[in-house]
Image (cartoon, rainbow, N blue to C red; front, side, top):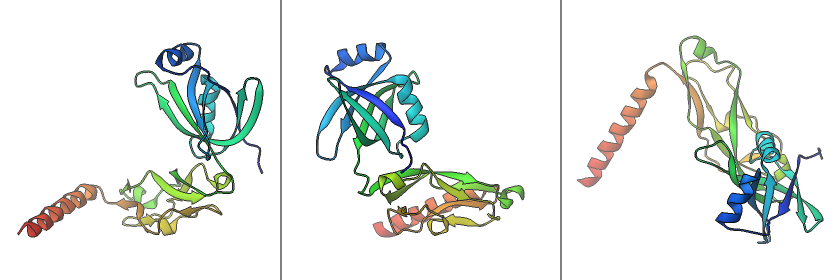
Length: 210
C-alpha cells in the first residue's frame, strides 16, 4: 500500500459558537471525527495543513488521521468528508472527518477530468458536458482522485456515455444507467434541444390534463 498523507488533529474539549470563534482566531479549524461505530470526537486542526490536505486529496482519498487525545495518539484511516468555508473569506470554518474500513466499499462522487482535444471542436463544434461528477462504488483505497474522459477521438455529433469510460480496477458505477457524460454538438444546437425538450414536456402535461 502506498504511503498515505498524514494529517494531525487534537481532541477539542470546548464546543459551541464562542469557543469555536476563538479557536478560528488562532488559526485552527473546529471539526468532528465520525467513525463507523457511531463514535463522534470533536477535534481541532491547523488551518494551513488542512487546506493543503484538501487541495491534495479533496473528499475522495484516504488519509492517515492522527488524533491526539490527552497526549495519546491514535492513527486511523479517514477521509475529509465535508469542508465548510466562510461565505465571505476563502477560509475553512468547519471540517468533518469520516473513519473508513478499507475493506468495505463506499459510494463516492468523483469528478471528471477531460483529456485531449476533440477534433469536432476544431471543426467548429462545442463540448456539451452533462455531468461534472460520477458516483462510483469502490473500496476506499481504490477510489481515484478523478475519472479521465478521453475526448481526443470525439467528432462532431459524437457523444461519450458511461460504458465508454475506462474506470480503474476495482471501481464501478453506482448504477447501471448508461447516461451521457458529454457530446460534441454544432453551435446553437444546445439551445434548440432545450427548447424542444421544454415544448415536449408542455404538450405531455396538456394531454394528461385532458
